[in-house]
Length: 166
View 1 (cartoon, one colour):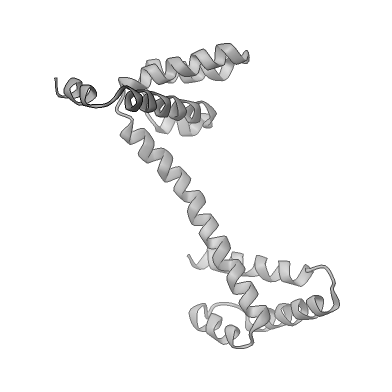
View 2 (cartoon, one colour; view 1 turned 45 degrees about the vertical axis):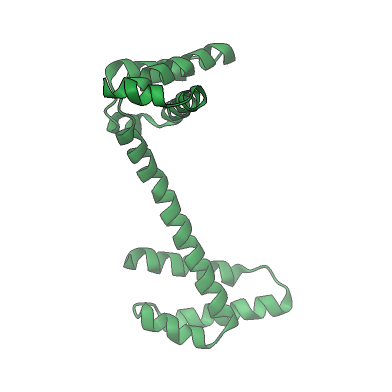
């Protein structure tokens, strides 16, 4: 009874938007790899509908199947599904943040001599000599306008070292 009261409070536009949101989640489910789909423990009818949508290639048929998935999603608590999808998407955000951190360190190491001692204070396990060689070679490549081979190697070294220490 409580849900009906809540739905009556929502405007027609809000209800329609919620249905579109559920359909979008359904589209994401259709694109998920089978292993991740299994982790969601969806109701059998919804799971079967998602698998059927993968099989359908005709545009109109696929669109109708996605609408059907959206309809099935109305009867399912979508909060756990959203939470799991957000968790999986969060992994991408963490990796992106790591890549930005690595890029910043590489830039600072190439541009500023003091950055090396600061870096080694935070990450003492790095091979100092190899870092210095890569930094020096990266600077030479920049000055001579050569391709950034050493800069890429420096980035790779930082990524491997920081990934291992995380």
